[in-house]
Length: 138
Image 1 (cartoon, rainbow, N blue to C red):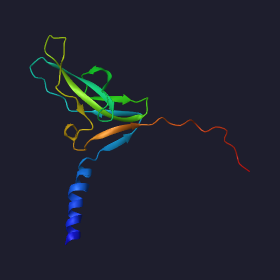
Image 2: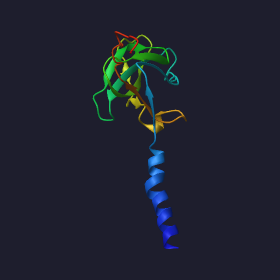
Image 3: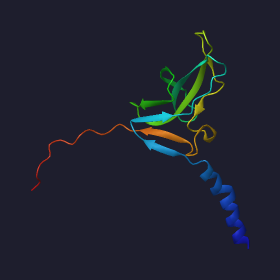
Image 4: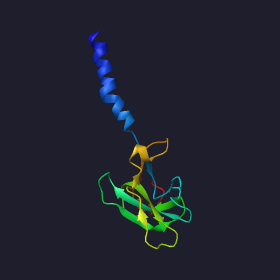
């Protein structure tokens, strides 16, 4: 009975939280990320998006290009690392040129911000050089 109880405690308090925090890592030098559009607050609003990357969950957000109106973007990586992707919405009320940013950036590391597929990150590794001087070995 004690062994069964110990096993249940292990599953409930050790293994279950690990599964809940699982995320998918994609290895690529380029990845396309997409998100649902944010509805305008008022008629005539323009909604734009700013995409960011950061290394780790506490790294400094780095802007990827300029604000866009599309709801997806291809990101190309040139420095090795494990990246998370973030997006925030920027509202431009009709006739205004200054944007109003969303309160937070939605990050791919946060399950609440992701689709049902869950949190994800992108890993980029620089490829090694090409092999040279191939020959038939005796």
